[in-house]
Image (cartoon, rainbow, N blue to C red; front, side, top):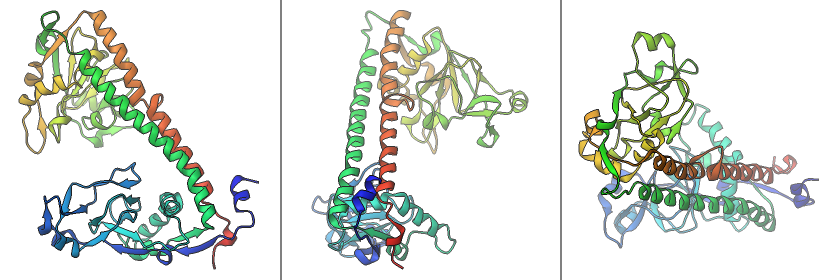
Length: 409
């Protein structure tokens, strides 16, 4: 007999719709509210789509406020009420840690009956049962968003309160451990950033600083589009992948190109030991991050990237490209518009410290340890956090799977 079977042995589980145990309402349209937006500290928090963190259980703050007149025209909720997106990323529940008024991209869930523990409801709304139910309704073709009627119709299993609280206790153990690991990861990332800056903070009187164009060579890639990319062939890096996939170094590519296309277009290749530097992006902060290419085969680079070849340790250069000191230097050479960009001349003006090769290797060794700890999905804290999340999801769905014969007809 499983733990859940023992827990529920002889227990009656009632099933009710969410609309039968709570009040469901949609937020207010942003258009009439816009004129009430205020910077007044006495205003009421205005909670928009995008004011929440994907990994958070709570809404703790918001950037904007509205006047009391605006609040009167919107849905004003109390701390402890739920909100749930009914459009983008629909179905993800959050608990308000503040009083506030909500955008019409949210639905509110409030006024729970005394049969329902709010933390138990949070875990159920986060479960695959609820998420799959929303998906089935959205994909039915009859509706385009998660409207109030759909939310009200979700069936909720309601065991006795003491059973709900025991389920919450077990699941909160997993979420608390994940939260502790996430806090630890944040602390280590901050520590990593601090030491990365410090390790490149050389005394100019003792260490040579040189313009990157004086000690190395930049080569710009050539254009190809995402539709050209394949699952096998010649390794390639599209500039967009520099933001979403690649870290400080890589020896395998995410994407490939047809060999014939590479030859026909005479595309350019970064060789082993080169540093691939992204040169275009939507914001200035996006630009300049480097990835040391350590694969045995060369890799084709997009025309919004440069390869940089020098006698310096390539990982040393890549780490430097992620420092504040590097970015402070390139800002004045970036052209801004719909897409911000920098050319080889601008990158070449950057001064980089040039310590002995042994010192470069020492710095790389230290930063590699931090990099593994904070970014590796096969080692380090991100892997541990991912495992804990999966463990939580497994036990959540197991503990919330109630006997079918308890489902009301």
